[in-house]
Amino acid sequence: MTVRPENLYLDLIKKTLAFTLWPEPPIPLDTFNYSRPYLKRWLVSSISYILKRKGLQLVKQREFTTDEREEGRIWPGYAYTMIGLKRLDNLQSCIETVLRENVQGDLIETGVWRGGACILMRAVLAAYGIEDRKVYVADSFEGLPKPDPEKFPADKGDKHYIHKFLAVSQDEVEENFRKFGLLDDQVVFLKGWFKDTLPNAPIGTLAVLRLDGDMYSSTMDALKNLYPKLSKGGFCIIDDYGLKGCKQAVDDYRAENAIAAEMKIVDWTGRYWRKA
Image 1 (cartoon, rainbow, N blue to C red):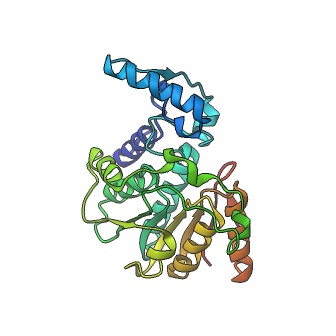
Image 2: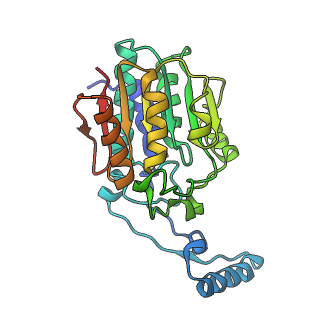
Protein backbone atom coordinates (compact mmCIF):
# COMPACT_ATOMS: atom_id res chain seq x y z
CA MET A 1 0.00 0.00 0.00
CA THR A 2 1.41 3.37 -1.06
CA VAL A 3 0.91 6.25 1.35
CA ARG A 4 1.05 9.68 -0.24
CA PRO A 5 3.54 12.19 1.25
CA GLU A 6 0.81 14.76 1.97
CA ASN A 7 -1.10 12.19 4.02
CA LEU A 8 2.01 11.32 6.03
CA TYR A 9 2.67 15.02 6.61
CA LEU A 10 -0.88 15.83 7.71
CA ASP A 11 -1.09 12.76 9.93
CA LEU A 12 2.08 13.86 11.72
CA ILE A 13 0.79 17.44 11.99
CA LYS A 14 -2.44 16.27 13.65
CA LYS A 15 -0.71 13.98 16.12
CA THR A 16 1.73 16.74 17.02
CA LEU A 17 -1.00 19.36 17.43
CA ALA A 18 -2.98 17.01 19.69
CA PHE A 19 0.18 15.89 21.53
CA THR A 20 -0.81 12.24 21.13
CA LEU A 21 2.71 11.08 20.22
CA TRP A 22 3.76 11.50 23.85
CA PRO A 23 2.29 10.80 27.29
CA GLU A 24 0.72 13.83 28.94
CA PRO A 25 3.43 15.42 31.11
CA PRO A 26 2.74 16.85 34.55
CA ILE A 27 1.62 20.48 34.53
CA PRO A 28 2.71 23.25 36.91
CA LEU A 29 0.46 23.21 39.95
CA ASP A 30 -0.23 26.91 39.58
CA THR A 31 -1.67 26.51 36.03
CA PHE A 32 -5.26 26.51 37.32
CA ASN A 33 -4.48 28.37 40.53
CA TYR A 34 -6.82 31.25 39.60
CA SER A 35 -9.82 28.97 40.15
CA ARG A 36 -8.87 27.87 43.67
CA PRO A 37 -10.24 29.44 46.88
CA TYR A 38 -8.21 32.40 48.10
CA LEU A 39 -6.28 30.61 50.86
CA LYS A 40 -5.25 27.69 48.64
CA ARG A 41 -4.40 30.09 45.84
CA TRP A 42 -2.15 32.12 48.14
CA LEU A 43 -0.47 28.99 49.51
CA VAL A 44 0.25 27.50 46.08
CA SER A 45 1.48 30.86 44.75
CA SER A 46 3.79 31.39 47.71
CA ILE A 47 5.33 27.92 47.58
CA SER A 48 5.65 28.06 43.80
CA TYR A 49 7.42 31.43 44.01
CA ILE A 50 9.93 30.17 46.55
CA LEU A 51 10.65 27.00 44.59
CA LYS A 52 11.05 28.82 41.28
CA ARG A 53 13.77 30.98 42.82
CA LYS A 54 15.64 27.75 43.48
CA GLY A 55 15.05 26.43 39.98
CA LEU A 56 12.33 24.02 41.18
CA GLN A 57 8.64 23.70 40.37
CA LEU A 58 5.53 22.16 41.86
CA VAL A 59 3.77 19.96 39.30
CA LYS A 60 0.67 17.82 39.18
CA GLN A 61 0.58 14.45 37.48
CA ARG A 62 -2.36 13.98 35.11
CA GLU A 63 -3.36 10.77 33.40
CA PHE A 64 -5.89 10.49 30.58
CA THR A 65 -7.18 7.56 28.58
CA THR A 66 -6.55 7.25 24.84
CA ASP A 67 -10.26 7.83 24.19
CA GLU A 68 -10.31 11.00 26.29
CA ARG A 69 -7.41 12.44 24.32
CA GLU A 70 -8.69 11.37 20.88
CA GLU A 71 -12.15 12.76 21.58
CA GLY A 72 -10.91 16.03 23.05
CA ARG A 73 -12.45 15.51 26.47
CA ILE A 74 -9.54 17.14 28.33
CA TRP A 75 -7.89 20.51 28.76
CA PRO A 76 -4.37 19.51 27.77
CA GLY A 77 -1.27 21.11 29.19
CA TYR A 78 1.01 20.93 26.17
CA ALA A 79 -1.11 20.31 23.06
CA TYR A 80 -1.76 23.07 20.53
CA THR A 81 -5.43 22.09 20.39
CA MET A 82 -7.96 20.54 22.73
CA ILE A 83 -10.35 19.26 20.04
CA GLY A 84 -8.84 15.76 19.74
CA LEU A 85 -7.97 13.64 16.73
CA LYS A 86 -11.52 12.84 15.63
CA ARG A 87 -12.40 16.50 15.16
CA LEU A 88 -9.03 17.16 13.52
CA ASP A 89 -9.73 14.29 11.10
CA ASN A 90 -13.15 15.78 10.37
CA LEU A 91 -11.66 19.19 9.69
CA GLN A 92 -9.09 17.74 7.30
CA SER A 93 -11.77 15.75 5.48
CA CYS A 94 -13.99 18.82 5.04
CA ILE A 95 -11.13 20.92 3.66
CA GLU A 96 -10.00 18.19 1.29
CA THR A 97 -13.57 17.81 0.03
CA VAL A 98 -14.00 21.51 -0.81
CA LEU A 99 -10.59 21.53 -2.50
CA ARG A 100 -11.38 18.42 -4.54
CA GLU A 101 -14.80 19.72 -5.56
CA ASN A 102 -13.63 23.31 -6.03
CA VAL A 103 -16.08 24.81 -3.56
CA GLN A 104 -15.16 28.48 -3.50
CA GLY A 105 -14.07 30.38 -0.42
CA ASP A 106 -11.64 30.74 2.44
CA LEU A 107 -11.43 28.95 5.78
CA ILE A 108 -12.16 30.34 9.24
CA GLU A 109 -12.27 29.26 12.85
CA THR A 110 -14.01 31.42 15.44
CA GLY A 111 -12.41 30.70 18.80
CA VAL A 112 -8.92 29.29 18.32
CA TRP A 113 -7.25 28.83 21.74
CA ARG A 114 -3.60 27.99 20.89
CA GLY A 115 -4.37 27.90 17.19
CA GLY A 116 -4.14 24.16 16.53
CA ALA A 117 -7.16 23.76 14.26
CA CYS A 118 -6.19 26.84 12.24
CA ILE A 119 -2.63 25.51 11.94
CA LEU A 120 -4.10 22.32 10.47
CA MET A 121 -6.18 24.41 8.05
CA ARG A 122 -3.04 26.13 6.80
CA ALA A 123 -1.16 22.82 6.71
CA VAL A 124 -3.79 21.25 4.45
CA LEU A 125 -3.55 24.18 2.06
CA ALA A 126 0.24 23.88 2.10
CA ALA A 127 0.16 20.12 1.54
CA TYR A 128 -1.86 20.57 -1.65
CA GLY A 129 -0.06 23.68 -2.87
CA ILE A 130 -3.09 25.96 -2.50
CA GLU A 131 -2.07 29.61 -2.61
CA ASP A 132 -5.36 31.39 -3.37
CA ARG A 133 -7.25 30.70 -0.14
CA LYS A 134 -6.83 32.29 3.26
CA VAL A 135 -7.18 31.01 6.80
CA TYR A 136 -8.95 33.46 9.12
CA VAL A 137 -8.03 33.17 12.79
CA ALA A 138 -10.78 34.86 14.81
CA ASP A 139 -10.50 35.23 18.57
CA SER A 140 -10.51 37.81 21.33
CA PHE A 141 -7.13 36.42 22.43
CA GLU A 142 -8.34 37.35 25.90
CA GLY A 143 -10.50 34.33 26.74
CA LEU A 144 -14.29 34.27 26.63
CA PRO A 145 -16.64 37.18 27.35
CA LYS A 146 -18.72 37.51 30.48
CA PRO A 147 -22.25 36.31 29.85
CA ASP A 148 -25.03 38.81 29.17
CA PRO A 149 -28.04 36.88 30.52
CA GLU A 150 -30.50 39.67 29.75
CA LYS A 151 -29.67 39.56 26.05
CA PHE A 152 -28.77 35.87 25.91
CA PRO A 153 -30.59 33.95 28.67
CA ALA A 154 -28.99 30.67 27.56
CA ASP A 155 -25.62 31.97 28.76
CA LYS A 156 -26.83 32.59 32.31
CA GLY A 157 -24.35 31.12 34.77
CA ASP A 158 -21.68 30.44 32.14
CA LYS A 159 -18.25 30.45 33.81
CA HIS A 160 -15.91 30.20 30.81
CA TYR A 161 -14.80 33.80 31.28
CA ILE A 162 -13.08 33.05 34.59
CA HIS A 163 -10.66 30.57 32.99
CA LYS A 164 -7.40 32.36 32.26
CA PHE A 165 -6.21 29.05 30.79
CA LEU A 166 -8.42 29.78 27.78
CA ALA A 167 -6.87 33.20 27.18
CA VAL A 168 -3.99 32.81 24.73
CA SER A 169 -2.43 35.93 23.21
CA GLN A 170 -2.22 36.58 19.49
CA ASP A 171 1.58 36.68 19.80
CA GLU A 172 1.59 33.15 21.21
CA VAL A 173 -0.71 31.85 18.48
CA GLU A 174 1.44 33.49 15.81
CA GLU A 175 4.50 31.86 17.34
CA ASN A 176 2.76 28.48 17.22
CA PHE A 177 2.13 28.96 13.48
CA ARG A 178 5.75 29.95 13.09
CA LYS A 179 6.96 26.78 14.82
CA PHE A 180 5.27 24.73 12.09
CA GLY A 181 6.59 26.98 9.33
CA LEU A 182 3.05 28.07 8.46
CA LEU A 183 2.87 31.76 9.36
CA ASP A 184 2.53 33.75 6.14
CA ASP A 185 0.21 36.16 4.35
CA GLN A 186 -2.39 33.44 3.83
CA VAL A 187 -3.07 33.58 7.59
CA VAL A 188 -5.24 36.52 8.68
CA PHE A 189 -5.89 37.34 12.33
CA LEU A 190 -9.20 38.89 13.45
CA LYS A 191 -8.65 40.09 17.01
CA GLY A 192 -11.59 41.11 19.20
CA TRP A 193 -15.01 40.01 20.39
CA PHE A 194 -17.00 38.40 17.60
CA LYS A 195 -19.80 40.95 17.91
CA ASP A 196 -17.28 43.66 17.03
CA THR A 197 -15.03 41.97 14.47
CA LEU A 198 -17.22 39.65 12.43
CA PRO A 199 -19.84 42.10 11.09
CA ASN A 200 -17.14 44.04 9.20
CA ALA A 201 -14.57 41.30 8.67
CA PRO A 202 -12.88 41.48 5.23
CA ILE A 203 -14.26 38.10 4.20
CA GLY A 204 -15.90 37.43 0.85
CA THR A 205 -16.89 33.78 0.64
CA LEU A 206 -16.13 30.83 2.88
CA ALA A 207 -15.74 27.16 2.09
CA VAL A 208 -15.22 25.95 5.67
CA LEU A 209 -16.71 27.64 8.73
CA ARG A 210 -15.59 26.16 12.04
CA LEU A 211 -17.24 27.50 15.21
CA ASP A 212 -15.63 27.03 18.61
CA GLY A 213 -17.22 29.74 20.71
CA ASP A 214 -18.62 27.58 23.56
CA MET A 215 -21.39 30.05 24.44
CA TYR A 216 -24.77 30.96 22.93
CA SER A 217 -23.74 34.55 22.21
CA SER A 218 -20.41 33.70 20.58
CA THR A 219 -21.96 30.94 18.48
CA MET A 220 -24.89 33.08 17.35
CA ASP A 221 -22.62 36.02 16.50
CA ALA A 222 -20.54 33.75 14.28
CA LEU A 223 -23.52 32.11 12.58
CA LYS A 224 -25.38 35.35 11.86
CA ASN A 225 -22.34 37.10 10.41
CA LEU A 226 -20.58 34.25 8.62
CA TYR A 227 -23.05 31.53 7.61
CA PRO A 228 -24.54 33.70 4.81
CA LYS A 229 -21.00 33.87 3.36
CA LEU A 230 -20.62 30.08 3.30
CA SER A 231 -20.68 28.76 -0.26
CA LYS A 232 -23.12 26.11 -1.38
CA GLY A 233 -21.37 22.81 -0.73
CA GLY A 234 -19.29 24.36 2.04
CA PHE A 235 -19.08 22.92 5.53
CA CYS A 236 -20.27 24.36 8.84
CA ILE A 237 -18.51 22.64 11.72
CA ILE A 238 -19.68 23.05 15.32
CA ASP A 239 -17.13 22.19 18.00
CA ASP A 240 -19.24 22.66 21.12
CA TYR A 241 -22.62 21.11 20.40
CA GLY A 242 -22.21 19.20 23.66
CA LEU A 243 -22.48 22.48 25.57
CA LYS A 244 -25.97 23.77 26.36
CA GLY A 245 -25.53 27.34 25.18
CA CYS A 246 -23.85 26.46 21.90
CA LYS A 247 -26.39 23.73 21.14
CA GLN A 248 -29.30 26.08 21.65
CA ALA A 249 -27.72 28.74 19.43
CA VAL A 250 -27.18 26.23 16.63
CA ASP A 251 -30.69 24.80 16.95
CA ASP A 252 -32.22 28.29 17.04
CA TYR A 253 -30.29 29.50 14.00
CA ARG A 254 -31.08 26.41 11.95
CA ALA A 255 -34.77 26.70 12.84
CA GLU A 256 -34.95 30.44 12.15
CA ASN A 257 -33.30 29.99 8.75
CA ALA A 258 -35.02 26.73 7.76
CA ILE A 259 -31.73 24.86 7.47
CA ALA A 260 -32.67 21.24 6.87
CA ALA A 261 -29.24 19.83 6.01
CA GLU A 262 -28.47 16.72 8.04
CA MET A 263 -26.28 17.47 11.05
CA LYS A 264 -23.72 14.67 11.32
CA ILE A 265 -21.93 13.46 14.44
CA VAL A 266 -18.14 13.66 14.75
CA ASP A 267 -17.78 12.72 18.40
CA TRP A 268 -19.41 13.49 21.75
CA THR A 269 -19.57 17.23 21.00
CA GLY A 270 -18.53 17.77 17.39
CA ARG A 271 -21.20 18.20 14.70
CA TYR A 272 -21.17 19.38 11.09
CA TRP A 273 -23.35 19.77 8.03
CA ARG A 274 -22.94 20.72 4.41
CA LYS A 275 -24.70 23.79 3.09
CA ALA A 276 -27.29 22.89 0.48
